Image 1 (cartoon, rainbow, N blue to C red):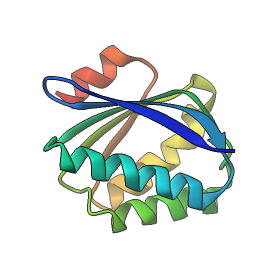
Image 2: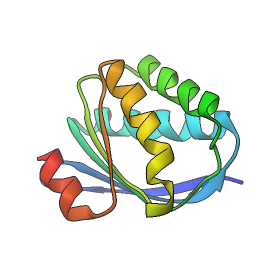
Image 3: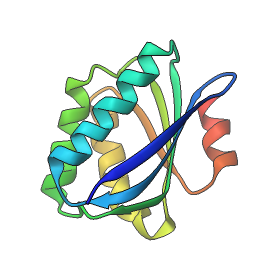
Image 4: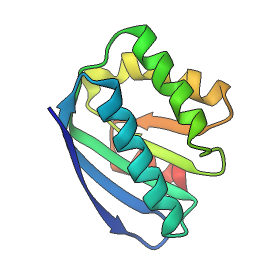
Length: 121
């Protein structure tokens, strides 16, 4: 199980399009580290991550809490990150969103590109 992604430099943000699945915290952590490092290296402060092609297999509250804590180690508080997900995952990612925001990160989940871009820009 893995997560694959492509990147596209947009005018005002870095676009990440990902697909795949993983129930392994290390795989999700590595993916998160790679895309945030790439965003920083490209000089962007905004990132739109389209994960509608991903299956979220981490559904335990403790796993989501661990991911939010891991995000904090990435030093991404200066980034604004909009994530588009499948509707079936929206309830579970709200916990991750709130936990990350409580740690000073600007992360928000959406169901469509237009809403994500409006918030991001």
